[in-house]
Length: 94
Length: 546
Image 1: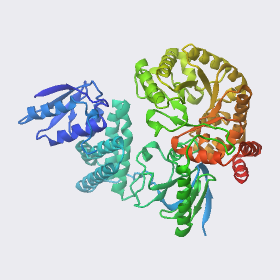
Image 2: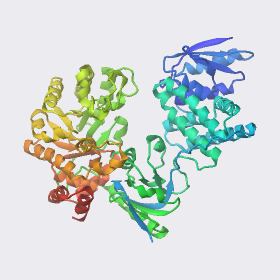
Image 3: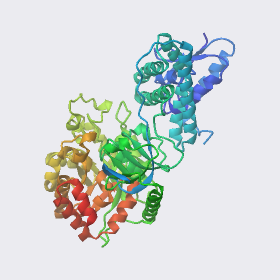
């Protein structure tokens, strides 16, 4: 299954705003994406509770997995998001 | 006929309006066999959908961006597909809708707790979702702060920080709680926002939703069933009084011109507001140390202290060294569990075990002081003996700090105020802890609220000992506890010899106005009356009538 590993760049970790942006982006992908950190089992990237329970802080490596048509594009898009410091970016709706 | 009920007034001011109650968390019904699984799943997921939608709408209304991000994340938790999968599993194993929601939330709660740190703190958000969804399934009112669509007086059992994170202080006119004490979260919140508040008012349980009531946050009286016209009159007067206070400005002084600096209690540069305060009387440095696996670095501390000092050029900033310990545990202190944390290794005592944390902090404060134009004062919390004060002073002065003081929170320190002032340059009285230790009453214990009343004459006697010692030594003695924020009590404190008062920024105008109306002689008379009274209620009454 295609995978992509990326380091969390957001200052607060995968938490609050960054987690929200990530989960919403995952829901927009045409393919199911799962994410895991360390030796914990993977969780659906669309699950806010699962993503928070990863406990991914700034600097934590997480691995994204997806299968089937569109998987590579979905993985690239989500990995790109996680590699940015989402806390430093102004909310678009503010 | 209106009925008068009483509690403890903890935040002065008057207000009147309709009472609305914060609903309690729902109680699960007895388990019943499931006859229609599809219906139970529909009920449970429908309730979770409703909660997600409610939270999304609430987030959109939040003015604070951080609060909005938390609420949006919480809304996504309620909308989480895996929560629905857990609900379906629960119903499949024979649970009804309410129990299935409860079990699903409990399952995910454990995973959050295991993630630790701020992820674990989100367990409180999940508890809130659970309470709201279970209430929705059972057809009960939604727990949490009500939203009646008009200004109202909030009635609650007690208020926790999570309940009030998004409290709209434009809509809530006053707070009345059945439990709580003068130093409970409700009291501190009310004073921070300048809302009148009465706590420990047991009869509040019987106030019906929508009843017109009036609240006197100084006397602790709540009048139930006042009628709309009377309420409108009181509210009108309250707004006028607030406007009068808002127009006051300038340094604190008595009517006959004795200066009484009105300083701020802050947790970071963020709390400084407009920056027109006379100085900072209590800069709590704990925020730098919370949520950390290791102590913050020297450089990080220098930056944080410099940010506050630079905002107060030429003014006094009193920095309190780390006040943590077994009562407020921090992982890197590596303190063993204690059976009685309030009486354990806390405040300055932690430096018996890890002196290097205080050394680095003092180095950072000294460096920040050199680099800025403000006067960096430093003080240690939880000092009990003259020896501890002398040891702290030696360490601080060795780094070039010129204003070194200690907090008076332990009766032993008040009893030796004179001798402490032979070693240090100033005293700052923490009335909340001083009350707790003088009366052997836990600050969090709602049933002992009367013992923690800052008007207790025995507490005032301890403060008087510090005030006298300060006058004799010509060294400053201030109060930085919640007592300083009570305008009437502020006149008593000044009469007892307290030279500066430190409080949350919204409390400053009320205290400034009260001091401006009383001469030093009147303040001294207030002090005599309060010390002579038999109990806090009589002390307050005697001074109000003076």
